[in-house]
Length: 115
Image: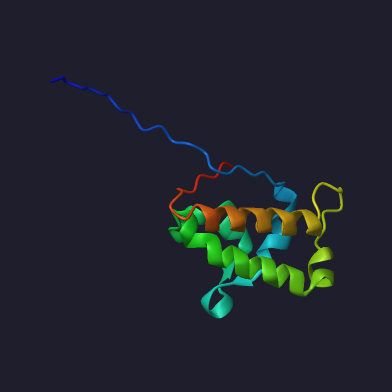
């Protein structure tokens, strides 16, 4: 016979990390998603807590919808490319695509944003 003892601490582990310039905020705010298209991509990306989104599963399908909207009309959104050259339509599309995939792969992951 024996005794096994373990002290366990669960540490948060990042399963995805991404970064995008705030210069693309205006472009993201032009992408309306969700029921009645009342939610914009900006709020989903930069301020999910304002919509009470806490987990990746809460935003995954909205990111997919936003990504598809971005792809559906490149010229509409390219006019919001930052004049200073920091950020681009293509960069936002790529960011949303990767973030969406990470949310689908990790639906129980807690959202954490830093502005």
